[in-house]
Image (cartoon, rainbow, N blue to C red; front, top):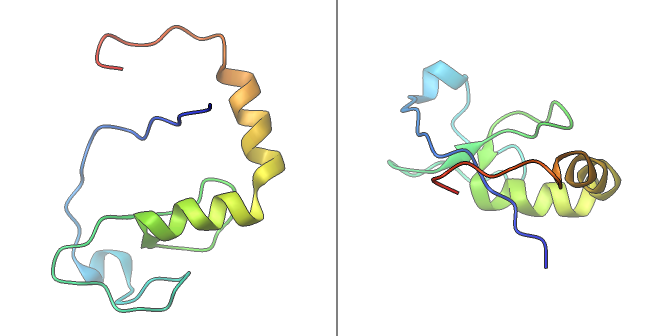
Amino acid sequence: MQLLWREPWLKPLIDYDIDSESCSFCKKKFNSLSFVTSCEFCQIEIMHDKCANSHILERHMSELKTKIGQHKEKALHDFQ
């Protein structure tokens, strides 16, 4: 089993900060409170956190496996 740790911080944004009102993956409008992120492997822009998971698993599996291999032996922080 591979578990991928997302960064623990939240940064509040408003739609004009990101210049988008909808998810670049599913095209649905963001709710009044949505968890969003971007893809670290391409420039697809802002999307729902769950959509980012699907996007990365569907389109960037080889890059993901490479990244997992690079970080596999690194020690965890206390909060992980």
